[in-house]
Length: 501
Image (cartoon, rainbow, N blue to C red):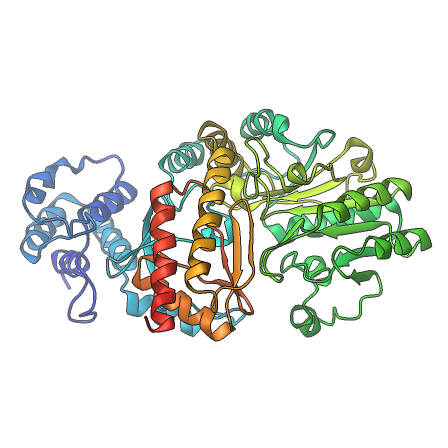
């Protein structure tokens, strides 16, 4: 096969082998050429791109067959044999079809979760997600609250690009400027007294390390955890997660160091700490994944703080999902612990502050952190320069865009809207639970939840989170009033379909 033919096949999606593929886009071609031959000018073929194609309804310009034929000739002449081969290879990999993508996932995915293949997203704009068919949806999941600034962010993308051109990675114990820059921004946001960081890459990791730090400090392995709590998928995080379906497969259902209690049972906390069976407690102040958005009682949380102080116990708040304004009730409340008016001894934080880039941390006091010593733990990627650039830019945006103020306003709007819909459909909507932009309400059954999520897509709203018969929403924290109205209208229309009205 000639170089020109190989390039033409790549530009047109190799229609003979893959008839379902689209032609390459102009943007993709320029992107590939910048990777393959960054020192050469792309201007030589620009004239062939003029009027070569028209943008589709999403503004994406696909090459026509005629334009692809002309460009492949120019590229064959312009590029070296190696550059042409690499260009064709990159294009073939980049322009993979939806059918191929689904088939590859089905073939090679370890089945730790159900593969969501009914909608395949390819790009985003703020809170909007766009699929391979050009349909658009308001995102009501935020990737489990990891993309609170939306699913695309040009400022963070540029920051990551610039950092990748300078220094991509260093291990956790090396000093570097991006981390120092981020520390100066986040420190004033933290609850008073929490100042010592240990950087991680996922929420589960942060929970695991929080447990290790608590045990090192208390010299006691016993930990109290709450029924209905969820703390992640790593070994230690699963051990303190209540649902047995997560623990039993890994023989973590009979751990003698974990003591599960009913949520809001302060007497049980005191009994365990007084007896010495446990000297630490871990809890989500708003139980999400397993409890269907269930805030703990204010009185209980304050009592736990007093009990921990009384018995020199350690209070761990898992704020991986609730942190960075997700549950703000007032402007400036960055943490669920702010809302509850307490200061934990250890916090696990994550998701939101990377703007979608993986970065988490454990934060604690100088006294508790002094129990850890070199060699007790370590991390290759924790707090790496790329993660810290993303964290710095995302956190600055959260501050500059008054995220907590928007959360307060949109929370009130969602609450009023869902309560209004409940009056129309009292037989369908049960208990409503909302704190900030953690939103949940009960429907008659989990089957109706599934129907609800299916119908929501018809009205440009995407939701995939649920707990039993409770549907859960975690919209990006930048969602606007207009987008909230669209979502509420979608909820009402979806219920109308279910009710047969």
